[in-house]
Amino acid sequence: TRRIVCAPGLASSSQTPSTQNMAAIALVQGVLGQGDRRVPAVTDGMTNLIVAAEAVATERGHTQLCTEHVVYALFTQEECKKSHSYNFLVHMAGVDPAEVIAAVERLPGFGIQAGGAGEIFLSSGLEEVAGLSAEVHGAVRDAGGDYALCTEHFMAALLLTPRCLGARVLEGSCDRLSSATFVEALGIASEVFRARVVATRTAFLQGQPWVVGPGEGGEVEVPGAEPVPLPALVRDNFLQMRGPTAESNWMVKDRVLTGAHPDYSYNGREVAAGLVRDAHVDTFVCFTEYEPDYVRHGLTTATGRPVRFIWFPIDDFSVTSPADTVRMVEELARLVHAGCRLYMHCLSGRGRTGTVAIPLLMALYPDLPEPDARRLVNEYKRNGRTGHTRGGHMPEVAEQRQQVAAGAAAYKRGGARAGAKAHD
Image 1 (spheres, rainbow, N blue to C red):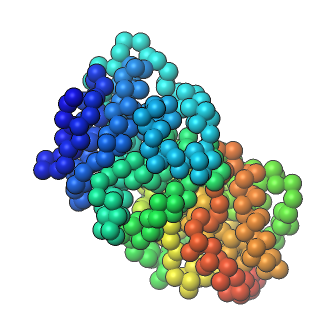
Image 2 (cartoon, rainbow, N blue to C red; image 1 turned 60 degrees about the horizontal axis):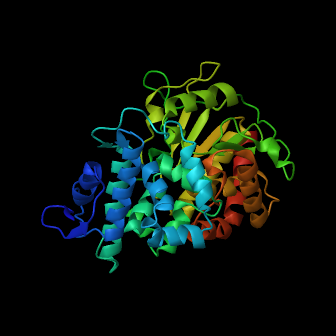
């Protein structure tokens, strides 16, 4: 038995490690114990999971320990199946272990590689998840929760990082599973994640959208002087709302797309450029807390116009003020009436995106009741996307759903003002 030390001065856990577990020790000892929050202890279950994941990587001759190894170990190793995370995922969320195992095994490069792994390094994705799990644990502990970091904190952090393959496999295996449902099941308040975000309202709220284009950019005029009629609202045959990418769908046919963050697929610049080229998107609307990487690369439409970028940050699992949301919806409705093509996204294109997308649909089609608007937006997503984000619900959490319902009348009034402006 070897002592696996969590971090200098922290509690330790006695385990029997795999034959080669340097990566696991590095993760438990280093990453989880660094940063602004020091982890006082790591449970045996958490250590077992990382050691088992490292063994999975070693057996396959892999040189990096990744999130998919952790997910695979959780569903294949008997010791890991005793964890609360496994119990929640299988018995409460309805995840099929066989489906998850098969999905991981289908990932490119997950098969056994000749030559052996040698020294194993932590992937950047796993380091990111580990660091976030320490923040999740710290916030829960501040609220009087668990003393030691456990698998639940780690899996919550994993699902909050959907760009990682492990998270994509999990979310793709069950429509009811998302970071929001997992976090809510653990009793972790959304304030946990608001605390880690340092975001301010954008210049848009002062009437100056941040526009990215050639050179220094500048405000982009809307195309044409005459308003462009809206297409008929799609109420059935939802497959026609299939988006140009696996993680996107049309909400207003050929006018408004909703979807995942372009950077969700690690090649955000190419995804964004493809949306401009193939779907003729001329306006990106981002609801994440951080500046997207893809906007650093100036994009132009086929006619040479700079592509507009509007950043309206909303904390994850949260809402912004009702007045700000009404103002944003009215401005987006004005752009749609003027003929702009929008791509709206947060990270997975569900929670925060739904908080604005459903109001926008009501603003554009004011005879549409809120329950019908919410149902249609979810039908468009389920039938229009083919990737990992087709599951889950728009929006994700109760606070978001309540704001959408409470503001229905205001959104429709804003839509009427936007339509009038377009005809002025």
